[in-house]
Amino acid sequence: MPEPSATNEVILQAKDLKKWFPVRRRLRQAIKGERRWVRAVDGVSFSVRRGEIFGLIGESGCGKTTTGKLVMKLLDPTSGRLDFEGADATGLDKEAVIAYRRKVQMIFQDPYASMNPRFKIRDVLEEPLLIHGIGKSRQEREDLVTQALAAVKLTPVSDFMGRFPHMLSGGQRQRAATARTLILSPDLLVADEPVSMIDLSTRAEILAMMKELQRQFGLTYLYITHDLSTARYFTDRIAVMYLGRIVELGSPDDVVDHPVHPYTRALIAAVCEPVSGQVDVIKQLPIKGEIPSAADIPPGCRFHPRCVFATKECSELPEPELETVGEGHQAACRRWKEI
Image 1 (tube, helix red, strand yellow):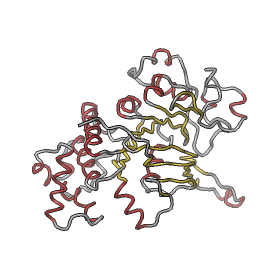
Image 2 (tube, one colour):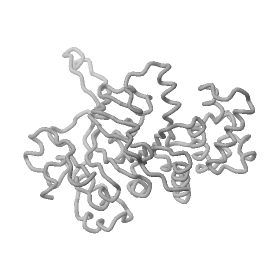
Image 3 (cartoon, one colour):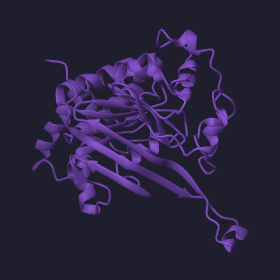
Image 4 (spheres, helix red, strand yellow):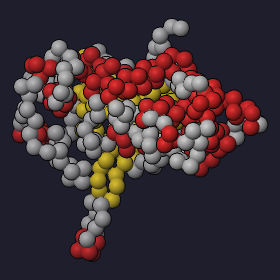
């Protein structure tokens, strides 16, 4: 079977997407009418092409998982727009959301909590079929369950159908969770840290399986992770997030081997094992302080309090937007040519 390749067709597009959560106010703030917000996602724009694996990476709290939940319609955006297959998917009603989720499925981070412990694996996979009215008979649904389990290599299928989730290993549970998403034949899979809670020896197997499924079913992935090493291996393009915004975007080779934004460079330097030939050079780049609160975003470039290259203008001028630094490579830094 030929290797899959991303087309120029955009399947998902986020335009200035924001999700702000209100901070609980004290009595004095309520009297004064003051309101503070946690700006978890703060103006994110990106597009995902059909057949591509698009990675969102960053530290904990950067907004990548919230972005995934916005794509999955588990959260409604504060503002901005989300388009899916060329149509506005921002403000869908309940029935439209159900139809949307048949095409967009999510692989959750925790394979231990993403399944009903009282359901057998057969029932876990049959549930979405019942919700969406797929399969006219129990036998037809059983056949679809069998096909999905076989696709994720949980074989012999008969050995797994009657098991409960606690009877499976972490890797087997994540395979079963993946089978549950495949059973609806989705166009887009949102994979939120799908291997972070699996032991190291199994991670490569799960990622290889996901790539094989992409080849077999023509899937598109939005891959969310903090792990730069797996993102480099697994994705076609990478978007680096910091404090609710994308600060660098490009191919894995561009972002990992030739990073431009100081935050990306510091992120690569923090990787324990080298992921590119540039790591020895980048390791000299320090990063100052702790990540600020998303409820108290610094003025100007939001990375400037931690950036060793920051100048006065970085805090005084408006926040930099993504600009082209190479073919298919963008970064949000005014000083990228100098550093």
